[in-house]
Amino acid sequence: MVDILEEHKAEDIILMDVSQQVSFTDYFVICSGTSSRMLQSLSEAVSEKIREEYHQHCSIQGADSAGWVLLDFGDIVVHIFSPDRRDYYQLEDLWKEAKTLIKVH
Image (cartoon, rainbow, N blue to C red):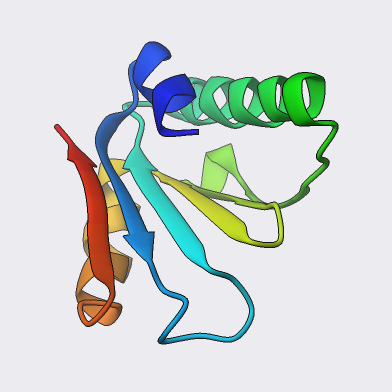
């Protein structure tokens, strides 16, 4: 998922292992996009590629126009933010006890 996001120009991508902090998932992928159109493009790219390659479907919550799209694959939850929404929610700080596995700027 990180590779897909990087290919599609997502910014500040972080993969976190939250398995010790929460019971509903094992990993968070957090990234930013520069516009609502980019958020939509990123969410579509990830969901389509994972569906094609792994036959895994996700539930999608939020809206690109709101600045936050969440893709729930079960073991992995992808958060795609606008920069201002990411600054507002600060998920990295909220889950700071989680281990950061990958960080791509």
